[in-house]
Structures are given as C-alpha cells and as structure tokens.
Length: 238
Ligand SMILES: CC(=O)[C@@H](O)[C@H](O)COP(=O)(O)O
Ligand SMILES: NCC(=O)COP(=O)(O)O
Image (cartoon, rainbow, N blue to C red; front, top):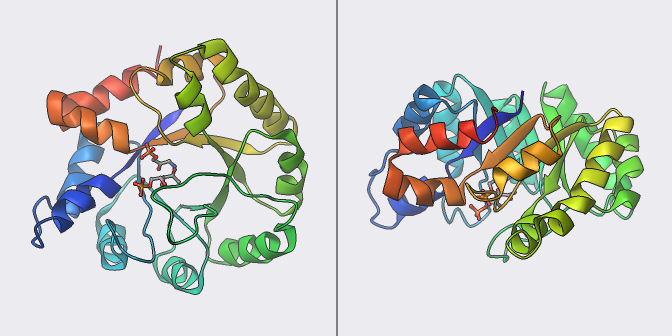
C-alpha cells in the first residue's frame, strides 16, 4: 500500500497572509486525517515563510497519523526534531533562499555529514528519509550513510509528464528498482498531482509513501478538502 502524506505548508501560507489564525493549521491537519490523509507533512524553512517552528510543536500534540518533518538539517531543525521526535524526518538539501525544493542530495559529496546527522536522528527514534534525484550513482552511498528511505524528487517527472509520460517515468522506475535492491524504503514527492500520480503508482507499485501538498491544496479550492483527499487516495488504490 502506498500511503498519502498531506503536506500542509500552503495552509500556513494562507494563514500568514493576514496575520491571524485562519485557516487554523492544526484544525486542517486533524480534518485532513479524518478525511483520509495517512500522514501529515510539514517543511519548516528558516524564514518561516509558511510553517512556523511553533506550528510543528502544536501539530506534534495533535497529529495521530504519521508526522513527517522535512527540512535542511541545520542546528534549529535538529533541535526541533530532538524536541518533537516525529515518526519520520525527510532531509532536503534546500539552501534558505530557494523558492521551493529544487534537488535531491549529493550523497557522495555529503556522505560524512549525512551519516552523522542520520545517526543522531536515529537516536531520536525517527525513521529517516533523504530527498534524492533519480541518479543511480547516489543510491549506494545513500545506503552506506544509513538512511532508512529515500524520497524520489519528482519535479522532473511532473515537468516531462505532459509531453511524454513514459520518458518521464523511466529514470524513476530504474532508481526505484535499485532502491528496492538495496533494501531502501521508497517515498516520492514534489509536484505530484491528479494528472501524474496514478501513472507513477502504476509504474512503481511498491512506493511506500507519497507526500503531496501544493497541487492537493490548490485542487481543494475547487473540490473541497475531503473530496480532494479521497480523489488523491483513489489514484493510489486501484
Ligand atoms: C521537499 C518538498 O518537495 C516539499 O517540502 C516542497 O519543498 C514543498 O515546499 P514549499 O511548500 O515551500 O514549496
Ligand atoms: N516531499 C514533497 C512534499 O512534501 C510536497 O511537495 P509538493 O506537493 O508541495 O510539491
């Protein structure tokens, strides 16, 4: 079964736009779980453009499905993880200034840094996933640094999908099979939506989890959050 983890960053974006607490990030997370979300994902960034560090502390007290905290492993994030102790941490090589996540880890260059960080996160009881491009050379080093899972960075898949879905998915299928051979758990995320998700799942049926935020929240503006979550769940269960 491939689990759907709903990323609620954009709920916080909307909340921050007016300075109050509407929409209430915690309430939306609980409703999303009630509507069928099998996990809640947040990605606090140093500038707190959307999810704030306090949101993460508040969500920890409320979320009952898997809580997945994404981010660059700077001192502040590591301290947050030590405090919150989520079920999963997804490490993302985001520099602070980027508009959104735009690449996976170079697990060759950063092997020593990542190995130590992953070891520390394991002491906090977290399952660790690292964001990764579908480049095969990064997978054995990923295994060596001790990560439990890798998360395929699917923006390139989403970008090429409208032109050629088979060409788009090919590198991801190859990478997925290598991850499986290396006994790495397999997540996927970034720019997945109602158009491209089912084909990804058909092509990689052993995906453990997808984390989806931007497109899902945009779709919810038209279809409603409950209906939208059910629509995304149906793309994974067939
Ligand atoms: C790691 C990942 O792909 C998501 O967390 C993405 O970075 C969403 O971040 P924004 O919501 O800030 O675009
Ligand atoms: N890890 C991907 C994620 O959490 C959401 O990415 P997106 O669906 O907002 O592009």
